[in-house]
Structure formats: structure tokens, C-alpha cells
Length: 403
Image (cartoon, rainbow, N blue to C red; front, side, top):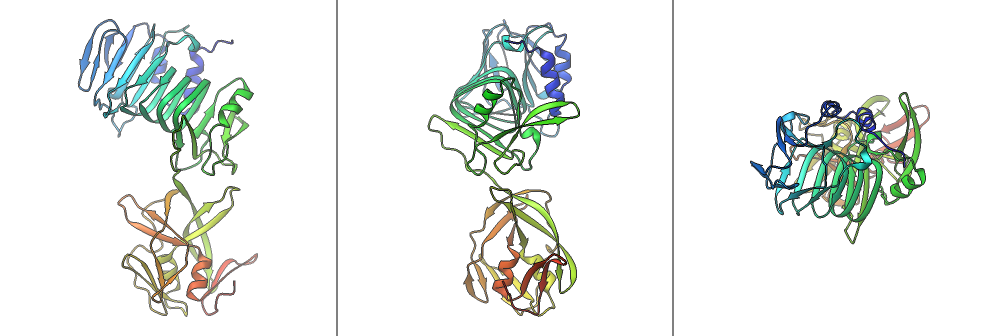
């Protein structure tokens, strides 16, 4: 088998935009041991600190370790690094504990091949959260790992879970039981990367992952200025925002639903009004736009189609009544794509329940914003919504809904 040297490791990190200073230092690293931040420890000597202990025989235990610095996820003080491992290493995450570091990785002096790295086993039933996890050969049993970026050249998964916004597959993955979840707000090429020479093996592995529509992921070759890579797409032809693998009877997690930011200009009685809409995509990538109901009420206020909006546990729409603004109109306290929920609140029109499909977007403080299909609002409230090649989407407030 062709040897893959550490230079590939550095090249991959650069391609993904990951932190590389420690990797660059590793090219000349000759010490044998591990480090927390700037403090170095020998593999042969027992040691301990706040939230961790080491037995002097290649077994480390985390018991509530928390050295992550969220405001500076690449900060050196939060580093946990294995240097020049010469035999297998075990990390025990004590059951029931939550542990966090900025980065966990393994480094070697020049000339060490990636395929010869000893196995690092993570077990114990606890959890580990980090910004970046990069290892040569990882065996995960019954622990939970959450990492913004996750990359291993070899992975054997026999239990536990991996949750990440960026998964990189580099050599061989043996998936027996447990779960791997890739979930991110916006599609991007770094959501799911494959660096495997064997295209058939890569395709076989990737096809085991399902997208948010329950369909297998797809491989595609892409050429960039710096080279050609294998990209992963969902069944709608988008870069991955959601991918899941489960095995051994593990129930797949429910995918977060994503509403895609979609600014749209709508003519209201001939005057262009810009709405900050959100679109839902079907499995073929087709968009269905939803608009905030208070934005529509604000835009139609003073016209023949004006209506008021109220809330008492249900959304109450009253036609013919002037709209009372609450300050949230025509803007949102968030931007970009957003997770959403199907709205479970009843929508009443003039006191009677109406069968209107709605979605709920929430801000970071938990405030809710209800969005509807514009045509549904026109039909329920009695104004016309239509489209033409000349005008695009338009509203006629003095005409009934025509369908």
C-alpha cells in the first residue's frame, strides 16, 4: 500500500482551513509524551490535574475536564496533544461526565507514516466536546464526541456517537455500531470530505450515510485552483448540511429542518416591497417560499386587504382591521439560513380556525416568528396573489383570490 506521510496531513489541514501551527511544529517534534497547553508530560510517569489523571501506562482518564476556550477555539491553553505515540493509547471519559478541550490531536516527527500510528481508543460512557479532533487511528466504543471538525485516517466505530459540522474521511472507516451525525446550518464543501484513493470504497462508505430526505449521499469529483477533490452531495444536489449513519440498532437522530434565507421583491398594488422570506427545499431542490405574517400585515395596512395580527396562544388574523405594529416588521433579529419547526399553533381567521400550513423560526432569545405561504394568506384573507413573467409575484389588494 502506498505510504501517506505527514505532509498529507498538513496539506489537508490547509485545504480545510484548520489550525496548523501545532502540525507545523510537529515536523520537528522529537519528544515522547502528551501535553496540555504548554505543559508536557512523559508517557512513562503518572500525572494528574484538574479533571484528568494519567496512570503512567498509556491510559488517560477525563473526569469533568474543561479547558476549552470558546472565544478562542484554537487557543493553546485548551490543547490536548499526543506526541510520538509508540503504542496504543486509551482515553477513558468517565461515565456521566462532560469534558471539553479546544483541540485533540496526535503528532509525529518527520518520517513517521500515518498508517503506522498506534490506535487511540476512546471509551467510558462520558462525552468530549472539542473544536477540532484529528487522529491517525481511532477506535470509539461507548463515548460521545462532539467536534466542529472531525478527521481520522482510520476509524473503528463499535459504539458511541460522533457529532460534527465537518467530517473528513481519509483512509478506512469500519462502522459496526453507534452513530455519526454531520449537521450544519449552510451547505459547504467541508461538510463532508473524502480523501480515499479507492473510489469504489469511497462510494460504498458514503452511500451508507443518508441525507435529510433519507436518501444516500452522492460522490462527485470537483476541480479547484489547488487540485481535484471528491465532494459529497445530498440527493438534492447540494453540499451536505445533514448526513447520518447509524448501526447496531441505534435510532437515527431527527434531522434539524433548515429554512433558507430568500429575499424576494413583491409588487403590492404595483409598488415593489422587499420581503425577507425563507424557503423550504423539497428532495429535488425546489423552493417553496414562506413569509412572516406580520410583514404582510404591515405591507397591506391601509389597503382594502388590511388585517390585524394577534397572539393568545393562537395566531389570530382579523380582516378589515388596521394593523397594530409591534416593532418586528420587515426585519428579523437573525440572518442567513435558520432551523425551523412546523408551527403547532392554531391559526384563526375572524375567530374561526383555518387550515393554514405555517413554520416557526425562533431567535436566539427564544422569540418566535410565524411564516406562511403568501398564496395561502391571500386565499384565507381575501386578496389576490399571482405571478407573471413581467411583474413576478404581485398582490392585488382590491381583488379576491383567484388561485
